[in-house]
Length: 232
Ligand code: SF4
Ligand code: SF4
Picture 1 (cartoon, protein in one colour):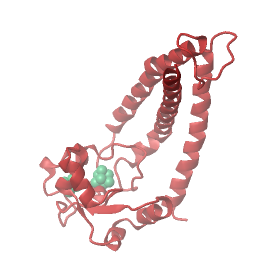
Picture 2 (picture 1 turned 60 degrees about the horizontal axis):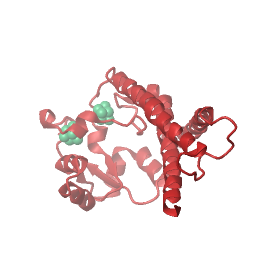
Picture 3 (picture 1 turned 60 degrees about the vertical axis):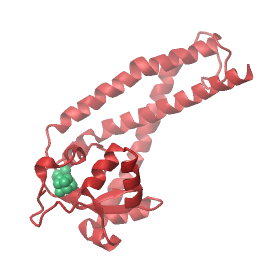
Picture 4 (picture 1 turned 180 degrees about the horizontal axis):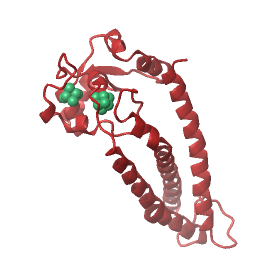
């Protein structure tokens, strides 16, 4: 197993652990709001204004006014910490960008107004062969082929000069300036943000898990309400 593969597997395990802990924590918060003597399930369908419906409303309010704000605050802290690190100019992210979308698909998205896609096609072009991309970061491509279902497309930026420097640095688009904006992305050790990623990974995993869990609750509670409306 390569270093990268074991790191990735370790990340998945860590995330699973954090997800379960976060789920228990949110469940406790939901239970704290349970009306006295009421023993229904939070995902049940309830008549409007009933004890169950009020409980659901209070839970959604707590998500909105309390947990979501805490998630936002912590995310701002993560971004603040990013300022302690900087790009070391290793050029890996200029030399290898991956996408689930083909070049044609990204161009289409750009034509339809997708801002990220517009920036992406303004700099990146596809590698002619997978082997060309493999030369840049072989462990990463191996990791993708072992763990990602479906096609992955590889791109590089022709603005990178022979000295591995950006030939249009002042005009580079926002996606270059912001990279890496997701601390859960796999970064090469040569990246100046590698240590930032390591530092914030547990918190970001927890925030990611919380967002997933809140979405799940909201969807289930809202779909229950919808069914009550339809039946009425
Ligand atoms: S525009 Fe410059 S910084 Fe952006 S990917 Fe290309 S070479 Fe890298
Ligand atoms: S991978 Fe990191 S250090 Fe390397 S060029 Fe990109 S942002 Fe800079």
